[in-house]
Image (cartoon, rainbow, N blue to C red):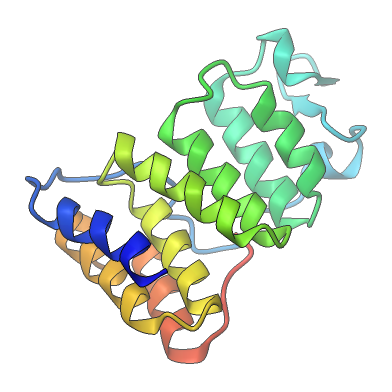
Length: 180
């Protein structure tokens, strides 16, 4: 397993760095909204229409859908979060792949989650949220040295002081990973 995760990290370490990456730098758990308190599973509350909508209806923007996925995942509603992700128009977007990795990892499908993180990083090596979540998965596997490499990459790619860096650093120090 060491080589599976080490090779991409070393290869990416040689690429030029971009300034910022995709993902949330929100340090607080998501606040419950009507998406988790009123809507049926897989539906997302639309503030404009004040209705619960299916993501595939196309009336919800990507940021609204990503926030819904984050909220649903934090609430432990992984199947609903996957349903929202399935409704996203670009399934190859690195943010979609990052969330697919996170949800699969939290559902106990660690290897599948790690595969999604690898795909996200192949598309966007500067996705510091994917690096943080991958690092937390590595902590869960006891691969602290490899998690540290992801932490180093987060700092090298402009992520110093972000939630991605802080959460991975804490996970490495304590062994406790995050649900958001």
